[in-house]
Image (cartoon, rainbow, N blue to C red; front, side, top):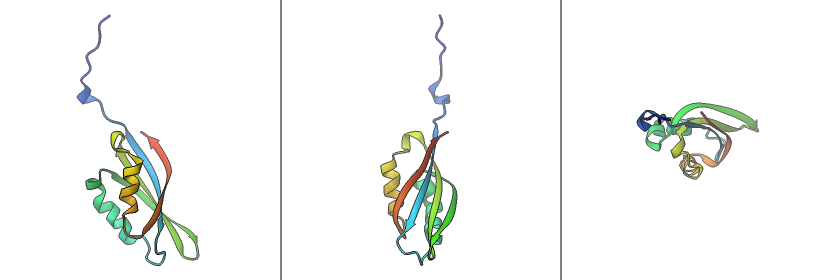
Length: 101
């Protein structure tokens, strides 16, 4: 009968957690500098760094997995792909898992 008035400013936007797999351009370099760059630029690029893990593939080659969290309305995969593809020593990226919280 009576509509409840809701203040939309009190509603919190959902977060999207994205697990990204980064493949190296030069396996001998490692990902130390790339990971440092990801952490330093996280706020200015509009995401929150959550976690990372290196995975040994073979013959000294490692992949880097990075977990980030972004606001739902800023979770354009194309933009995220551009940001991460432009990082030092990243040849390509792959979205492994995307979940909404």
